[in-house]
Length: 364
Ligand SMILES: *Cc1c(COP(=O)(O)O)cnc(C)c1O
Image (cartoon, rainbow, N blue to C red; front, side, top):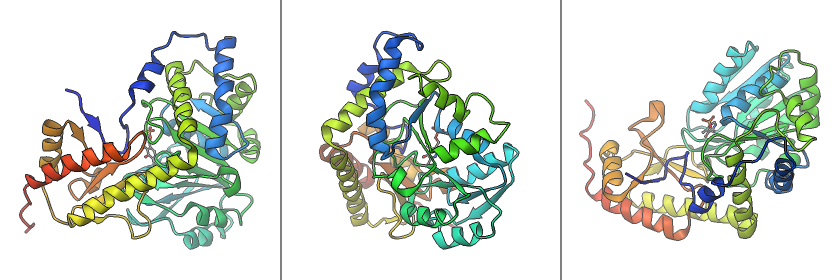
Protein backbone atom coordinates (compact mmCIF):
# COMPACT_ATOMS: atom_id res chain seq x y z
CA UNK A 1 0.00 0.00 0.00
CA UNK A 2 1.27 3.42 -0.78
CA UNK A 3 0.69 6.36 1.49
CA UNK A 4 2.05 9.84 2.04
CA UNK A 5 4.26 10.60 5.02
CA UNK A 6 3.56 13.63 7.20
CA UNK A 7 5.80 12.32 9.98
CA UNK A 8 8.83 14.51 10.80
CA UNK A 9 11.17 12.40 8.75
CA UNK A 10 11.56 10.61 6.53
CA UNK A 11 9.12 12.72 4.56
CA UNK A 12 7.54 12.41 1.13
CA UNK A 13 9.99 12.46 -1.79
CA UNK A 14 8.89 13.97 -5.10
CA UNK A 15 8.74 12.08 -8.39
CA UNK A 16 11.32 14.48 -9.81
CA UNK A 17 13.75 13.62 -7.01
CA UNK A 18 13.14 9.89 -7.41
CA UNK A 19 13.78 10.16 -11.14
CA UNK A 20 16.99 12.09 -10.50
CA UNK A 21 18.25 9.14 -8.47
CA UNK A 22 17.70 6.73 -11.35
CA UNK A 23 20.64 7.97 -13.41
CA UNK A 24 23.54 5.77 -14.52
CA UNK A 25 26.39 5.37 -12.04
CA UNK A 26 29.67 7.20 -12.39
CA UNK A 27 33.00 6.38 -10.79
CA UNK A 28 33.54 8.27 -7.57
CA UNK A 29 37.12 9.11 -8.63
CA UNK A 30 36.11 10.16 -12.14
CA UNK A 31 36.06 13.68 -13.54
CA UNK A 32 32.28 13.28 -13.85
CA UNK A 33 31.99 12.89 -10.09
CA UNK A 34 34.32 15.82 -9.44
CA UNK A 35 32.12 17.94 -11.73
CA UNK A 36 28.98 16.80 -9.88
CA UNK A 37 30.54 17.47 -6.45
CA UNK A 38 31.88 20.87 -7.40
CA UNK A 39 28.66 21.90 -9.14
CA UNK A 40 26.59 21.66 -5.95
CA UNK A 41 29.07 23.33 -3.57
CA UNK A 42 28.03 26.94 -4.25
CA UNK A 43 24.34 26.18 -3.77
CA UNK A 44 25.01 24.25 -0.57
CA UNK A 45 27.14 27.08 0.77
CA UNK A 46 24.43 29.59 -0.10
CA UNK A 47 21.82 27.50 1.71
CA UNK A 48 24.07 27.26 4.78
CA UNK A 49 25.09 30.94 4.57
CA UNK A 50 28.72 29.91 4.80
CA UNK A 51 32.02 30.29 2.99
CA UNK A 52 33.26 27.03 4.49
CA UNK A 53 33.09 23.86 2.42
CA UNK A 54 30.10 21.57 2.80
CA UNK A 55 31.14 17.93 3.07
CA UNK A 56 28.92 15.06 1.95
CA UNK A 57 28.77 12.12 4.33
CA UNK A 58 27.26 8.81 3.31
CA UNK A 59 25.58 8.17 6.63
CA UNK A 60 22.61 9.38 8.52
CA UNK A 61 23.07 12.54 10.59
CA UNK A 62 24.11 10.54 13.63
CA UNK A 63 27.32 9.53 11.94
CA UNK A 64 28.37 13.19 11.79
CA UNK A 65 26.96 13.92 15.24
CA UNK A 66 29.16 11.21 16.71
CA UNK A 67 32.03 12.16 14.40
CA UNK A 68 31.89 15.78 15.56
CA UNK A 69 32.35 14.66 19.16
CA UNK A 70 35.40 12.62 18.20
CA UNK A 71 36.86 15.47 16.12
CA UNK A 72 36.53 18.46 18.43
CA UNK A 73 36.15 17.47 22.09
CA UNK A 74 39.52 17.59 23.79
CA UNK A 75 38.73 18.75 27.34
CA UNK A 76 35.01 18.43 27.93
CA UNK A 77 31.76 18.87 26.07
CA UNK A 78 28.55 20.51 27.27
CA UNK A 79 25.57 18.61 25.85
CA UNK A 80 22.41 20.74 25.92
CA UNK A 81 19.40 18.45 26.28
CA UNK A 82 15.69 19.16 25.77
CA UNK A 83 14.34 16.14 23.90
CA UNK A 84 15.12 12.66 22.61
CA UNK A 85 17.84 13.52 20.08
CA UNK A 86 19.74 15.92 22.30
CA UNK A 87 19.42 13.52 25.27
CA UNK A 88 21.00 10.82 23.15
CA UNK A 89 23.88 13.09 22.12
CA UNK A 90 25.05 13.15 25.76
CA UNK A 91 25.00 9.35 25.75
CA UNK A 92 27.00 9.35 22.51
CA UNK A 93 29.62 11.67 24.05
CA UNK A 94 30.07 9.19 26.90
CA UNK A 95 30.25 6.25 24.51
CA UNK A 96 33.03 8.07 22.65
CA UNK A 97 34.90 8.16 25.96
CA UNK A 98 34.58 11.94 26.35
CA UNK A 99 34.18 13.94 29.50
CA UNK A 100 30.68 15.41 29.18
CA UNK A 101 28.09 17.35 31.17
CA UNK A 102 24.35 17.07 30.64
CA UNK A 103 22.63 20.45 30.70
CA UNK A 104 19.05 19.28 31.03
CA UNK A 105 15.77 21.01 30.28
CA UNK A 106 12.36 19.39 30.27
CA UNK A 107 11.23 18.10 26.89
CA UNK A 108 9.49 20.94 25.10
CA UNK A 109 11.43 23.66 26.92
CA UNK A 110 13.99 25.52 24.83
CA UNK A 111 17.68 25.51 25.71
CA UNK A 112 18.14 28.54 27.97
CA UNK A 113 20.97 30.90 26.94
CA UNK A 114 21.58 32.08 30.52
CA UNK A 115 21.99 28.51 31.74
CA UNK A 116 24.44 27.87 28.90
CA UNK A 117 26.44 30.98 29.84
CA UNK A 118 26.57 30.00 33.52
CA UNK A 119 27.87 26.54 32.66
CA UNK A 120 30.41 27.67 30.03
CA UNK A 121 31.69 30.32 32.44
CA UNK A 122 33.07 27.55 34.67
CA UNK A 123 35.83 27.25 32.06
CA UNK A 124 35.70 23.46 31.89
CA UNK A 125 34.52 23.19 28.30
CA UNK A 126 36.03 23.32 24.85
CA UNK A 127 32.94 22.14 22.96
CA UNK A 128 29.14 22.35 23.11
CA UNK A 129 26.37 20.47 21.33
CA UNK A 130 23.03 22.03 20.53
CA UNK A 131 19.99 20.86 18.65
CA UNK A 132 18.32 23.78 16.94
CA UNK A 133 14.99 22.06 16.37
CA UNK A 134 14.22 19.21 18.79
CA UNK A 135 12.09 17.13 16.46
CA UNK A 136 10.94 14.75 19.21
CA UNK A 137 8.90 17.46 20.94
CA UNK A 138 8.65 20.11 18.21
CA UNK A 139 10.70 22.67 20.13
CA UNK A 140 12.84 25.24 18.32
CA UNK A 141 15.43 26.93 20.52
CA UNK A 142 16.55 30.51 19.89
CA UNK A 143 19.70 29.81 17.91
CA UNK A 144 20.88 33.44 17.46
CA UNK A 145 20.57 34.06 21.23
CA UNK A 146 22.40 30.82 22.05
CA UNK A 147 25.17 31.47 19.55
CA UNK A 148 25.63 35.00 20.92
CA UNK A 149 26.34 33.42 24.33
CA UNK A 150 28.65 30.77 22.90
CA UNK A 151 30.65 33.42 21.02
CA UNK A 152 31.57 34.89 24.43
CA UNK A 153 33.75 31.79 24.94
CA UNK A 154 36.27 31.63 22.09
CA UNK A 155 37.77 28.30 23.19
CA UNK A 156 34.41 26.56 22.85
CA UNK A 157 33.72 24.86 19.51
CA UNK A 158 30.01 24.82 18.70
CA UNK A 159 28.41 21.75 17.14
CA UNK A 160 24.88 22.45 15.95
CA UNK A 161 22.37 19.87 14.72
CA UNK A 162 20.00 21.49 12.25
CA UNK A 163 18.70 18.16 11.00
CA UNK A 164 15.01 19.07 10.98
CA UNK A 165 15.27 22.84 10.46
CA UNK A 166 17.88 23.17 7.72
CA UNK A 167 16.44 24.68 4.54
CA UNK A 168 13.10 25.31 6.29
CA UNK A 169 14.28 28.35 8.26
CA UNK A 170 17.34 30.56 7.70
CA UNK A 171 20.41 29.36 9.61
CA UNK A 172 23.27 31.77 9.00
CA UNK A 173 26.26 29.63 9.84
CA UNK A 174 29.05 32.17 9.43
CA UNK A 175 27.16 35.14 10.85
CA UNK A 176 26.18 33.12 13.94
CA UNK A 177 29.65 31.64 14.32
CA UNK A 178 28.56 28.01 14.14
CA UNK A 179 31.71 25.87 13.91
CA UNK A 180 30.18 22.55 12.94
CA UNK A 181 26.79 22.50 11.26
CA UNK A 182 25.16 19.13 10.61
CA UNK A 183 22.05 18.16 8.72
CA UNK A 184 20.49 15.11 7.12
CA UNK A 185 18.78 14.34 3.83
CA UNK A 186 15.42 12.92 4.89
CA UNK A 187 14.01 15.89 6.76
CA UNK A 188 13.34 19.30 5.21
CA UNK A 189 15.46 18.57 2.14
CA UNK A 190 12.88 15.91 1.21
CA UNK A 191 15.42 13.38 0.00
CA UNK A 192 15.52 9.71 0.95
CA UNK A 193 17.61 8.93 4.07
CA UNK A 194 21.31 8.11 3.87
CA UNK A 195 23.13 11.37 3.20
CA UNK A 196 24.34 13.88 5.79
CA UNK A 197 25.76 17.35 5.14
CA UNK A 198 28.48 18.78 7.30
CA UNK A 199 30.17 22.17 7.28
CA UNK A 200 33.20 22.73 9.49
CA UNK A 201 34.98 25.99 10.36
CA UNK A 202 38.76 26.46 10.14
CA UNK A 203 38.86 26.66 13.94
CA UNK A 204 37.18 23.27 14.20
CA UNK A 205 39.58 21.76 11.64
CA UNK A 206 42.49 23.08 13.71
CA UNK A 207 41.02 21.48 16.82
CA UNK A 208 40.58 18.21 14.94
CA UNK A 209 44.22 18.26 13.87
CA UNK A 210 45.19 18.34 17.56
CA UNK A 211 43.15 15.25 18.42
CA UNK A 212 44.76 11.86 17.87
CA UNK A 213 41.72 9.57 17.95
CA UNK A 214 39.35 10.91 15.30
CA UNK A 215 38.90 7.55 13.62
CA UNK A 216 38.67 7.37 9.83
CA UNK A 217 35.13 7.42 8.41
CA UNK A 218 34.10 10.74 9.99
CA UNK A 219 37.54 12.32 10.21
CA UNK A 220 37.13 16.02 9.40
CA UNK A 221 40.63 16.21 7.95
CA UNK A 222 39.85 13.35 5.53
CA UNK A 223 36.71 15.18 4.45
CA UNK A 224 38.71 18.36 3.91
CA UNK A 225 41.57 16.69 2.01
CA UNK A 226 39.11 14.99 -0.33
CA UNK A 227 36.98 18.10 -0.65
CA UNK A 228 39.99 19.89 -2.09
CA UNK A 229 39.94 17.30 -4.91
CA UNK A 230 36.15 17.52 -5.36
CA UNK A 231 35.66 14.13 -3.75
CA UNK A 232 34.57 12.30 -0.63
CA UNK A 233 36.82 10.06 1.52
CA UNK A 234 35.09 6.82 0.51
CA UNK A 235 32.52 5.77 -2.10
CA UNK A 236 29.49 8.01 -1.53
CA UNK A 237 25.79 7.39 -2.19
CA UNK A 238 25.99 8.84 -5.69
CA UNK A 239 22.25 8.38 -6.33
CA UNK A 240 21.47 10.60 -3.33
CA UNK A 241 23.92 13.21 -4.57
CA UNK A 242 22.02 13.26 -7.88
CA UNK A 243 18.88 13.75 -5.81
CA UNK A 244 20.50 16.55 -3.83
CA UNK A 245 21.53 18.33 -7.02
CA UNK A 246 17.98 18.10 -8.29
CA UNK A 247 16.63 19.45 -5.00
CA UNK A 248 19.07 22.36 -5.01
CA UNK A 249 17.75 23.27 -8.45
CA UNK A 250 14.19 23.20 -7.05
CA UNK A 251 15.24 25.44 -4.15
CA UNK A 252 16.92 27.93 -6.50
CA UNK A 253 13.86 28.00 -8.74
CA UNK A 254 11.56 28.71 -5.81
CA UNK A 255 13.97 31.15 -4.16
CA UNK A 256 15.42 30.60 -0.69
CA UNK A 257 13.35 33.33 0.95
CA UNK A 258 10.14 32.09 -0.67
CA UNK A 259 10.97 28.61 0.61
CA UNK A 260 11.41 29.90 4.18
CA UNK A 261 8.17 31.88 3.89
CA UNK A 262 6.29 28.83 2.59
CA UNK A 263 7.39 26.70 5.55
CA UNK A 264 6.34 29.40 8.02
CA UNK A 265 2.96 29.87 6.35
CA UNK A 266 2.10 26.17 6.11
CA UNK A 267 3.23 25.60 9.69
CA UNK A 268 0.80 28.30 10.83
CA UNK A 269 -2.01 26.85 8.69
CA UNK A 270 -1.67 23.48 10.43
CA UNK A 271 -1.49 25.19 13.83
CA UNK A 272 -4.58 27.31 13.24
CA UNK A 273 -6.58 24.26 12.17
CA UNK A 274 -5.70 22.19 15.24
CA UNK A 275 -6.03 25.14 17.62
CA UNK A 276 -9.58 25.54 16.30
CA UNK A 277 -10.16 21.86 17.15
CA UNK A 278 -9.10 22.56 20.74
CA UNK A 279 -5.52 21.27 20.73
CA UNK A 280 -2.50 23.17 22.05
CA UNK A 281 1.16 23.07 21.13
CA UNK A 282 3.29 20.84 23.35
CA UNK A 283 6.45 23.03 23.42
CA UNK A 284 6.67 26.23 25.43
CA UNK A 285 4.82 29.13 23.86
CA UNK A 286 7.01 31.04 21.43
CA UNK A 287 9.27 28.04 20.81
CA UNK A 288 7.12 25.93 18.52
CA UNK A 289 8.99 24.47 15.58
CA UNK A 290 8.45 26.02 12.14
CA UNK A 291 9.08 22.78 10.24
CA UNK A 292 6.68 20.59 12.19
CA UNK A 293 4.05 20.98 14.87
CA UNK A 294 3.97 18.87 18.01
CA UNK A 295 0.51 19.10 19.57
CA UNK A 296 -0.35 18.06 23.10
CA UNK A 297 -3.19 15.55 23.05
CA UNK A 298 -5.26 17.90 25.21
CA UNK A 299 -8.53 16.29 24.09
CA UNK A 300 -7.25 12.81 25.01
CA UNK A 301 -8.22 11.27 21.70
CA UNK A 302 -7.19 7.77 20.65
CA UNK A 303 -4.16 8.62 18.54
CA UNK A 304 -3.55 5.08 17.35
CA UNK A 305 -7.16 4.96 16.08
CA UNK A 306 -6.64 8.34 14.38
CA UNK A 307 -3.50 7.18 12.62
CA UNK A 308 -5.19 3.94 11.56
CA UNK A 309 -8.06 5.87 9.99
CA UNK A 310 -5.68 8.29 8.29
CA UNK A 311 -3.59 5.47 6.87
CA UNK A 312 -6.36 3.16 5.72
CA UNK A 313 -8.94 5.68 4.53
CA UNK A 314 -6.83 8.65 3.51
CA UNK A 315 -3.46 7.08 2.62
CA UNK A 316 -1.43 9.36 4.86
CA UNK A 317 0.51 9.03 8.06
CA UNK A 318 1.19 11.47 10.89
CA UNK A 319 3.19 10.71 14.03
CA UNK A 320 1.57 9.57 17.27
CA UNK A 321 4.25 10.83 19.66
CA UNK A 322 7.97 10.16 20.08
CA UNK A 323 9.23 7.83 22.82
CA UNK A 324 7.84 8.82 26.20
CA UNK A 325 5.43 11.24 24.48
CA UNK A 326 3.64 8.46 22.58
CA UNK A 327 -0.11 8.91 22.95
CA UNK A 328 0.45 12.22 24.75
CA UNK A 329 1.40 14.23 21.68
CA UNK A 330 1.13 14.01 17.91
CA UNK A 331 3.38 15.54 15.30
CA UNK A 332 2.70 16.76 11.79
CA UNK A 333 5.51 17.74 9.45
CA UNK A 334 5.28 20.62 7.02
CA UNK A 335 8.80 20.10 5.70
CA UNK A 336 9.91 19.69 2.15
CA UNK A 337 7.68 20.10 -0.87
CA UNK A 338 4.32 20.79 0.81
CA UNK A 339 2.13 23.48 -0.71
CA UNK A 340 -1.05 25.28 0.31
CA UNK A 341 -2.94 22.66 -1.72
CA UNK A 342 -1.27 19.59 -0.20
CA UNK A 343 -1.67 20.97 3.33
CA UNK A 344 -5.33 21.80 2.62
CA UNK A 345 -5.83 18.19 1.47
CA UNK A 346 -4.11 16.90 4.61
CA UNK A 347 -6.33 19.02 6.84
CA UNK A 348 -9.46 17.90 5.02
CA UNK A 349 -8.51 14.27 5.64
CA UNK A 350 -7.61 15.07 9.23
CA UNK A 351 -10.97 16.77 9.72
CA UNK A 352 -12.81 13.67 8.54
CA UNK A 353 -10.60 11.29 10.51
CA UNK A 354 -10.88 13.33 13.72
CA UNK A 355 -14.67 13.21 13.47
CA UNK A 356 -14.57 9.43 13.82
CA UNK A 357 -11.77 9.21 16.41
CA UNK A 358 -12.92 8.14 19.90
CA UNK A 359 -12.00 10.10 23.01
CA UNK A 360 -10.28 7.91 25.58
CA UNK A 361 -11.76 7.55 29.06
CA UNK A 362 -10.01 9.69 31.65
CA UNK A 363 -7.23 7.82 33.41
CA UNK A 364 -7.90 6.51 36.94
C1 LIG B 1 16.05 12.88 12.66
C2 LIG B 1 16.96 13.61 13.57
C3 LIG B 1 18.23 13.12 13.92
C4 LIG B 1 18.70 11.77 13.54
O1 LIG B 1 18.89 11.63 12.23
P1 LIG B 1 19.34 10.22 11.62
O2 LIG B 1 19.15 10.50 10.20
O3 LIG B 1 18.41 9.17 12.16
O4 LIG B 1 20.73 9.99 12.03
C5 LIG B 1 19.02 13.90 14.71
N1 LIG B 1 18.63 15.09 15.16
C6 LIG B 1 17.42 15.58 14.88
C7 LIG B 1 17.03 16.91 15.42
C8 LIG B 1 16.55 14.86 14.08
O5 LIG B 1 15.33 15.36 13.79
